[in-house]
Length: 485
Image (cartoon, rainbow, N blue to C red):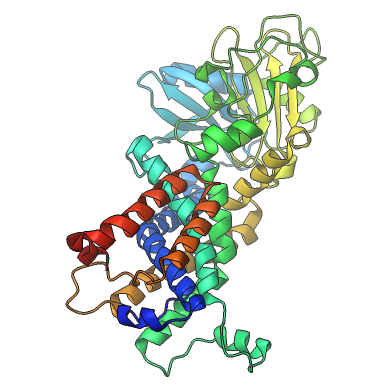
């Protein structure tokens, strides 16, 4: 995003009205950028790690992920019984290998509360080893990506950074927009604005590089911010996710009037099926309550007389159209078998094929069958958006997200370097763009920023604080003014 070269406050008095507004927007862009840049770098680096973990992990643990193809396979229940003897804890999930030479995976929560991914040979039933899901590089990156390892405070900071990134993109676009004299053709002005000038000095080169990189990454900045906000505690958890969750009033048709667990009990909703820090259930179902086993409710499922276990549940999943899926096992006497195929857990690559099916653990009846078609418009948008955010849509998505992260890192570094080149060598303050002499224009820019931030509560609160600091404290307290300018 473009940043002017001059920082002479004395020149502000002679600037026309349009330039006053321009410098007001520039000042907001500067403050937002100074706050956001460290977060963008952190998010991009940790995002890249999480993007490539599913690609690299099978190569790092080939002895666990791959097996020699045999003549016959062991039953899933026999493999589960082997794990019961080897591990003290609860088997929570089962994932069948997608190809004949891949191992099966069980997610085990140990008695110490550790989530393990345990690998078994489908032909011999042998346990091949395990991976700690809570202490791996992915879990660490995920925790930094979401909360900076400091819990709710980190979550709020990340939410604020994502909100400010959208405001940064808007102000940066305004600053980049070419404003050459009217006598020049519009097309020529835009062509010139898309060039990186190497011959006009270091500052001009980095300014142009920052502008073009910002323009090229504009869509990615907004997209990653909006889709990332879906996981935030306030904007995502309290507003958008709550509005977009699968409604319990649909249970007459989708839950077959089956009693559901208390929606106020966090351990009784779909989110309880996630594996530690790794979210595997569809985002819009997380807050929805789970149905319960042990009633006469439900529609036709597994044939009567067939035992309800991991093998019959998996066979039923294939029968009703699932291909690659995860089976979550009942956690208690009223728990259900949950068959899920979604992009959140990497079962499938197309979010429009999301499907979650619940079976009574005693009768095998279908208690709920929820697909993408049942989501509301916002939930559908978020399902696709999150899949794109995580690069679930095959190789092209991974390449695109990699390029986007690299551009965002370059944008952030170039923005910091421009600020460093522009600031006076002896300055001990922020060297912010000067406060416009026409405070009416400053107020207009502030109103515009506040209007944009109404969609993001934390950003609105922060902007109000900045307006107070900038309009009152900076103007009337010289010591603070020296820091800010």
